[in-house]
Length: 164
Image 1 (cartoon, one colour):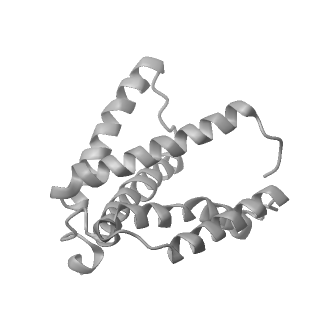
Image 2 (cartoon, helix red, strand yellow):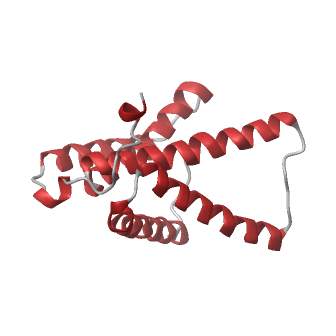
């Protein structure tokens, strides 16, 4: 969890942040008339088709063991299906801006998980990044938002509470 900064890596990280911001803004508009489950299904199926074409072009490399298949299925279910569904359900409840702020916790949770479960020792840069994420969240939580931001963007009839 250490190293040095590469300009190309920094540029790619900034481009990813910009792309994610655009994705959230467009998602809030496009999926406004659909449930979180339907929105997630459309995105996951579309992504799967795209990856299928890439996989066929570059060669198919499927898991060769039962544990590999189970790991792949677990990643697909929890890191993709549940993550998208939860994000869209959250976006419907708290709005796109607040949902994107909550999603900034992902790197922090990943680092904390690596520390707790894998015994990783974070570098000072990683710790500093965690502090910056915390500060950004506190500042964002104390900043006034517009009323339109808090209106639900996605129907939440398939939210965890509604399914219970």
